[in-house]
Image (cartoon, rainbow, N blue to C red):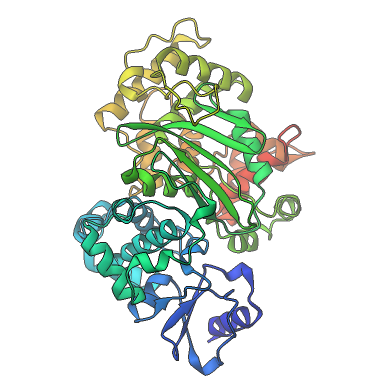
Length: 489
C-alpha cells in the first residue's frame, strides 16, 4: 500500500526520478505510460501500477505513443534484491532468449526454469519471455522513430526471426503495422544509413558525463580508444566484423548520442546494450545514495558527485589485460604500455571515410595472439609478461569467461587461481567487466588513503567498514577514488 501511495504521488507530480522505475496502466484507454507522461492525468481509480513495461504488456496494456515507454531509462539490471534476476536480465539483454528457451537460460543461471519464472514474476511482474519480447519491441520502436533503416533491417537488429513476426508483433501491440508508426517519427534528424547509425541512449539522472569521460580519457588505450572534446571513440569487433563506436552528450537533456560506424545491422542491439553497461546508464542512483549516504564520509563525497557511476568494460578480456598491466604502476604508465601492446599485437584497423579520427588504428589483441606473445621491450618485467600469457591461455581455452550468468565470487576465485592474479585485480575486473555492484578492491592504496585521512586504516579495517555499504560497494569505491587529488573529481 505504501509503495502504491509513493507511485501515485510520483505520477501526479510527474517526478522524473521515477521514470523507468514503474509504469502506469490507464484502464479507460488500455495504454501504459511513463510516470512523466505529459498527457492529462487520469483519475486515481482508473490507473494501475506495474513494476516493468513487460508486466504492463502482459496485463494487456499497449505502449503510449506520446510518452514512448521505450525511451525511458532501463530497469536497473539488479532490479530488486535477487542477484539471479540481475544476471538473468543481463543475459536477456545479450540475446539469451532469442530462441525462446527459458530452460537453457535457467541452466546458465544454475536454477530451474520454474524458479526463474517465479523470481521474474516476483521482482518484475512478468515472465522472462515477456521481458525479452518487450525489450525487442522497444528497441525496434526506437529504431523506427530515430532512424531511416529499412523495416527488414530493423526486424533483424531487434532479434525477430522474420519480417512476418516483426509485423505481427507491432500489429498486436500497437494495432497498426510498423510503417504507420514511422510517419510520426523524427528520424530525419539522425543518420539512418546502415554503415553509420545514431541512436539516443536515455539515462537515469543525475549523470556527470564530464567526470565519467575523464575516467575513460585517463585509461584510453592509444590506437584503440580516444577522447576528443566531449566525445569518446573506440574500435570494436562485433560478430567478426570491425567497427567504431562514438558516444557524446545528446542535444536533448537526459540522453547520450551513440554513433555506430561500420557495424553490421545484426550487431546493433549488442552494441547498444554494451554501451548502456559501459556508461552505467541504468544505475539506481536513489537506492545507491540511500545506502552510501549513511556513511558520513561517503555522504560528503556524494554531495560532490551525486550521479556516481561505475565504468563498465567493452570487453572483459581486454580489461583484465589492462588491469594486470596496471599492477603497482601509475594509471598513466599502464596506459602507455597498453598502447604498446595494442600497436605490436593488435590487428590493424582500417578507418572508413566517414570516421574522422586518425588516432584509431588498432583492434585490441585477441587472447590467442597474446597467449604466444613475448612482450619484450615494452616496459614490463618477465613475471608480468608470464601472467599476461597465462590469462590469455585461460580465456582462449574457456577456463575463464566473462559470462554475466556466473556468480561474481566464483569468477574472482577462478581468476585468482591464475598465478600473478590477486584479490585486487579480480575484484576490479568483477566490478567493471561483470558489472558486479558489490565488488570491492579493498586492498587498493587509493581507497585506503581516501577513507583514512588524516588517520591510517588497514585493508582489513576498510573491508569491515565497507560491510554497511553493501550491495553498492563498487559505487563507494568510485566515490573514494574520485575524491583523491588529481582524480578529476
